[in-house]
Image 1 (cartoon, rainbow, N blue to C red):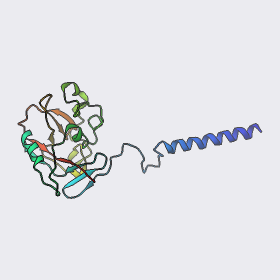
Image 2: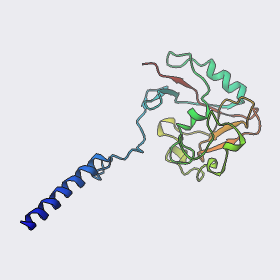
Image 3: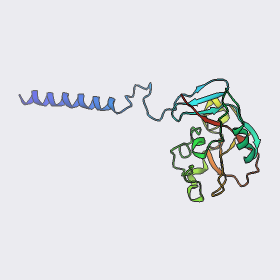
Length: 193
C-alpha cells in the first residue's frame, strides 16, 4: 500500500510540474513563447504601425535637418492622408531601438521624456557595438526602416537639459552639442482606431 501511495504522489507531482511549466510561458517547443519577442509592425509603403504603443511611424526619414527644421518638417508633414505628425520624444523614439537592451524602451538607460537631465545619462546610455544591430547595415532598428547614411535622429529639446538624439548605428542615446547639426528625422503620430 505504501508503494502505491508513493507512486501516486510521484505521478501527481509530475503532472503538477508539467502544468506549471506550460502555464509559465515557454514550453520549449521553440515556436517560441518567450515574452521578449519583437511585436510585428503593420506596414504599408509609407508607414508602420506599432500595435504595442499605438504609434504610427514614417517609414522613410528626412536627413540633414537642424532641430528647428526637424520639428517643422514633422508638423507640416502630410503622409498617408494624415497631417497630425510630430517629432517623437526620446521615450517614443526608444521604442524603435532593437538589439541593444540597455537603450531599448524600458532598458537601464534612464533617459526618458520625464528624465531629460545629465543625471539620467550614464554609461548604459552609450549603446552597443557600432553597426552590429539586427537591422539593415547593422543598425539597431527594424528591417522595415531600411538603411540610412545619417543614423543619428533628433528628439525635441525643452532647453532644460541636454540636447538628445539617438544614434541607431550603436543604439546609443547621445548628447548632441548643438541644435544646428544636420541629423535625421522620422516622424510619428498616434493611431486612432
